[in-house]
Length: 195
View 1 (spheres, rainbow, N blue to C red):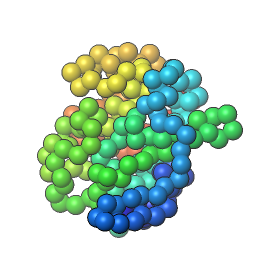
View 2 (tube, one colour):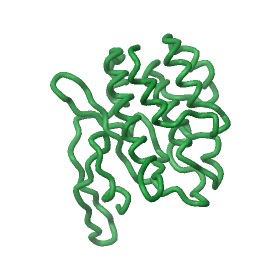
View 3 (cartoon, rainbow, N blue to C red):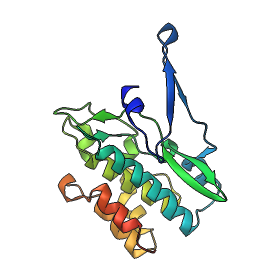
């Protein structure tokens, strides 16, 4: 609740308030129309939708990572946690679910979020904002190929991305060494280039 209350960005699900009646927290947020996962199950995205939704997610994560005094790591990026709304006739994305988010600290909870999106270091206590970069790469691949991520077929799934530039960006995000992954700022710069 404390993290959600401090975050305000057009690409993050708007937190309105919460109650803790009878020990059960209830979050009140803006209402969204769908999720990215539901849309991917219905049909392929147009190249414009891939570009706009991916950029929305990247901007939300960049906002969290640049938060002062300490970066916020989302730690559960997945297609189910990207909610969609319509702006005119265009789908737009908002990152939701702060259940596993944490302020960057010396040691972090091991293994947060959906395992199929998790960076290798998510299973250790030493996590940085680069765990979100890895998860973004997995999500971006899913958006491009419309297949749920499969860690055992990760290389095969990345190879299915037909656009060379996008495939290279995904591979950069999926580097085993977290220090070799781009920042979300770098990713935004890449996504803003014409596809």
